Amino acid sequence: MKYVTYKRVSTTGQGKSGLGLEAQDRDISLFLENYSEEPWEVIGEFTAVVSGSVEHPLELKEAIALAKGQKATLLVSKLDRLSRKVSVIATLMDDKKLQLKVAQMPQADKFSLHIYAALAEQERDFISKRTKAALAEAKAKGVKLGGYRKGAEARYRAISAQADANAQRVINTIQPLREQGMTYQQIADRMTELGVKTAQGSECWYPSTVKRVLERA
Image (tube, rainbow, N blue to C red):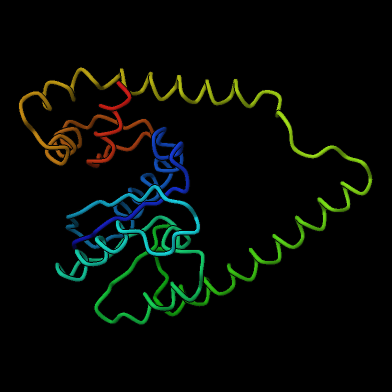
């Protein structure tokens, strides 16, 4: 079974720090290890760091083209990583040449995913209206909105420190392999063979995981 993975985060900060991407990597790994037909192979990985308003990132187009060209399955962590608009999801579902799987909904077929996308869009619209109403009510009562959140900076520093520690834990294994001219994919395969755990505790490594370790270290 061949897969092309696609991940997406909405801010440059998340892209650089790995926040958001690590959770998507974990979901994808869980799907491959527990729900995929054997043997499986990831033939391509694509990551988009774009604004939420961008409906068709270049990386998504490239991932779809590769999946269709190689008769592979496009694999995403969550349905909203493809798009939050049901119209975009519907177009992808109608493409008979595209096979699609969502890690968090491993048993869902295209029909089920289409229904879920429509329901999720309705839910987001309702939540948005409810939030605006609550903010307006709070403002009317004189509540000061926004501002600095106590403890947030310390929490972010702790997350960053943990990521640094994880990178230092494995850099002495990864760096020599990179200096030998090995690609990210080759290094990922070697780390998987060695049984070295990622920061999330998985023994399945991906090129993007290797790249983030090297960048952070």
